[in-house]
Image (cartoon, rainbow over all chains, first blue to last red):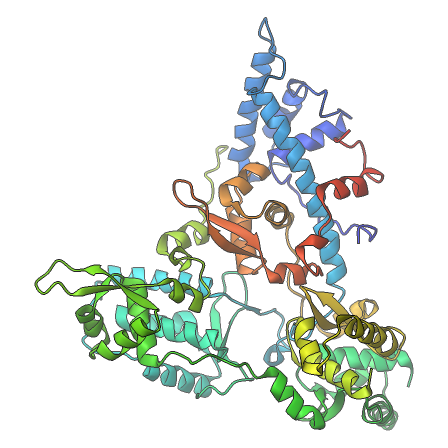
Length: 242
Length: 186
Length: 186
C-alpha cells in the first residue's frame, strides 16, 4: 500500500508551526540531531511576517512557537550557553518535532490507504432514495442529535417554558406520532420538529423516543452536510409500526 | 456482450440500490439499439445469473428499471441469518421512566410520576428488578423518599462507557461550538 | 465448496451493509473448521470473482470481516456513471489527528493538540462525526478529559482487518527511508 502513487492533497497553508519548522529544516538540509533551532529562527519569523503559508485561523499557534524560538535564541547567545540539558526548551521542541515528523509519515500512509480504498465502491454508499441528488448523505450519531437537542433545551429555558406544561407525554404515543409523520411526509426534519414542541418534557420524551427508534433501527438519521439539517427516515428493512 | 460490459453492469447495479433505468445503462455502455441491448440483458440474466447455481443474485426488472436482488429460493436462509435475536425489550413506560431518571438523577418516585403525568410505581419496580436503576439515597424531605439513579447495567444497555458519555451540555459546547481563535494580526 | 454455499455467501454479503464477521458466516454455513473455511473463501475469491473478467465485484476483508466491493479498475467508470460525489476525503488536519489517535490511543484532545502544535478541536469534531474515532473513556486527571480511540469504521475506511495491520513506527521509518529526502531519523 505504500507503493501506490502518493495522492497528495494540496493545501495553501502549513498545517501548523511544526509543519513549517520541519519544512525549514528540510529546506536547509539540516539534521535534526545537530541542529540549533536558533539557526532557523529568523527564517521562521520572516514566514510569519509575510504570512507566507500561515493559516490565519492558526496565527496564534504560530506565534506561540515563534516566542519559544526567540526564547531559545536568546538563551543561545548567553555567555555560557547550556548544552541541550534535560529541561531545555530547545530539547523539548526538538522532541516534539521528531514526534511530529512521525505523525506526518503516518498521515501520508493513511492518505495512500484512503486513496486505495476509495477505488472500491460499497453498497449503500449511495442511498437509494437520493440517487439523483448531488450531495452525499451520512448517518449521524446520537451525539449530533444531542447537540441540537441541547440547543433547543437551552432556547426553551430562555423562553421560560420550563415546567409550564401539565400535559403528559408518553414514548408510545410519540412513537406512533413520529411514525405517522414519516409515513405522511416521507421524513422528519429534526430541528423543525423539535422546535415545534412546547415543553421540556415533550422534548425529552421525543428525544429519547427518537434515540430508541434509531437504536432499534426503525429510523435512520441522515445529514446532508457537516452543519446541515438532520432528517429522519424510516428504515426500510423494519416495520415502523412495531 | 463483452465481459467488460457484464462487469460494468454488475458493478453499477451493485452500487445503486435503486432500480436503474434501462436508458441510463444503455447510454453508459454506448449502446443505442434497444433490441441489441435487450439481447445483452437476456444473455446476462440467463448465463451469468439464472443458469449459475453458485450465484446468489439475479437481475430483476421493476419500476421501469433494472436491479440486482437475491434469488427467491434463498429467502428463508437470509431471513434466518439476518434476524437479530433481541433480548426482551424494555416496555415503553419503563423507557420513559428511565429517560427521566437518566437526565434528572437522583429523582424520587413522586418527581418521576409528576413528569410522566402518571404514577411510575410499576415501571420503577420493573427497572429496579432489571437493575437499570437503583436507590442511591434518601431525599431529606418529610417521609424520606428514595432517590433513584441509573446503574452500570443502564450504561451497558445504552452502549455507554460511563454516565459522562451521555452527551452533556458542556461536552457539546466544547466540541461543537469551536470558537475561532482570535487573530492576532489585524 | 458447493455451489449452494457460494450462492449463500454471495447473497448474505450482498444484503449486509457492513463487513460480516467470518465467524458468523461459518456458523451460518455450519462449517466449524477454520482451515476448511479459509480454503473455501480463497477458492471463492479466485474462481468466482478475481479470475472472472465478466464480474464487477470482488471480496474484501476489512474491519475483521468480509465484504463485497466493486473492482478497483471500475472506479473511473463508476465515477462517471454516478454523478454523486463520493464522501469528501479527509483533510490533512484530520489525517494528522487520526494518525495520533491511531498510534497513541487512547489520547485526549490536549495531547493531540500538543503533538500537532495546533488546536485539534475542529478535526476531532469532524472525526467524531464521521465515526472514525469515539470517546473510549475519561482520563483520570483534573477535568476528566475525554479519551479518544479509533472505531470499527476506522478499520473499514482504511481497509484494515484489525489495528495490528498498521505498520509499527519502526517499520514505517524503514518504508519511508529509501524514498524520502533527508530523513531526520539517523
